[in-house]
Image (tube, rainbow, N blue to C red; front, top):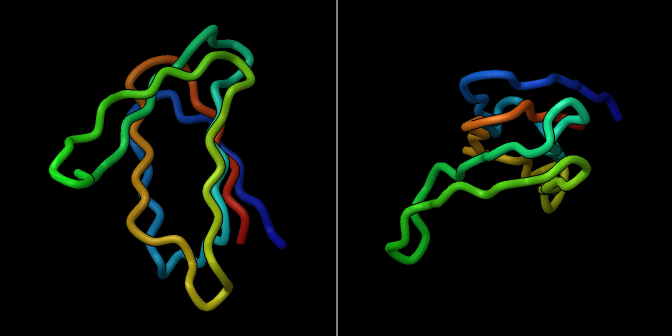
Length: 88
């Protein structure tokens, strides 16, 4: 498996099926006491709201199989620095 790592300090990043990502890990980096991220789609008529993570807390998302890679995931930084690790 190959990995890509990045610290998101502004803006957002989108993962599409063509990228071939099998998993993504999002974590508040050690230089920030907290960070905020927000989802990108409504679910059951509810709009996404920001989630606050503190240092060391994270979110992991995995694909079902290599034939069904992650698609349409946008990670948007609202505050703090966010460490991202993507596995292919």
